[in-house]
Length: 140
Image (cartoon, rainbow, N blue to C red; front, side, top):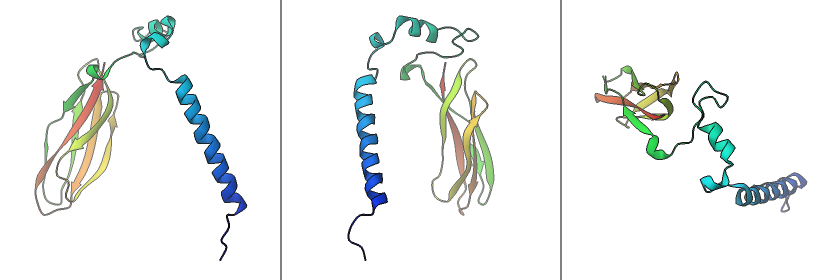
């Protein structure tokens, strides 16, 4: 058995060191920590309404996010159900997930549905009936 590092391992470790060091230096130098560091023209372009040159981009805070709980869907033992949550009109889905029983629940699909919804398809492999609910996180 060899007790020394191979050339490939040594090169990989050196490359990893330089990559992490460079990322750390870039993050400390180029990270934006306040709105005052953003050019006024960039802020104005980001606030432009949809359909203009800036598209649908906007600057928002987590206070602007809305969490929408979809209707709970009954899951029979051995059954499969589809649950959906839909964002209010004018909002777009930015994230989502599901809530429900954890034991023996198999989530087959947990993704956005279009630009305003979240869809979850789950199977209940347990002997216990339950319910599952899709959850959408929406932003203006």
